[in-house]
Image (tube, rainbow, N blue to C red):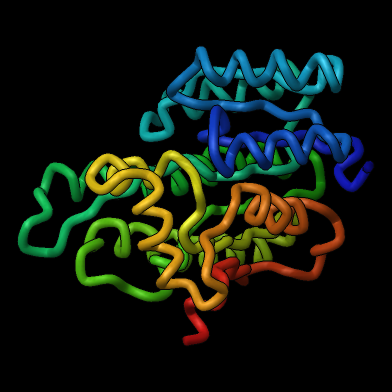
Length: 256
């Protein structure tokens, strides 16, 4: 229960879904955790619930991941609150359904801003602080959509593929800098989180789950903890020789 003992972690988009599941695991494994989210009421509520189980181990902060001033404020906050940062989980993201012809340019830019630009900003502003701890791990949540494409997810495919390659560039930069910071990406397939809301609104939750499950060789979609345990591994010292790589958690879809 101490895989992250003495570690300090920042998780974006932590009010729900994969981010929240990861925050719970991190706290369970001994880390101090800052949950950030644009939905501060939900983030605060979840942090308070976690602190009842793990006293004083978590805090929450409102955070627009597309805003560089917010990033500067978040990094300053975690330094003052917990004394530094060892682990950055760039998890915040949005989905979008649309092919190259019917996707609007405005939505294209929004998806790239939230899903890709935020990862650039997070790494840019967190790395100088992580360096001070002499050891760190960055985990960027991409998607199986960043590896295999779909005809109707032009913006999402592009942004998540960008996260994958950006992660490799960051890994090589950190290795060259000898700062002992690792950077990897993680690639889930369909996970039962609010990112599926758009599809669920169109055809209903049960129908959406069945539709997506038929695309997975294992016959089911994933749960948030399926991804959170992968993130936990990358955050821990167990993966100390792993950088510039990716973990695929997709029920076999990329093997087909």
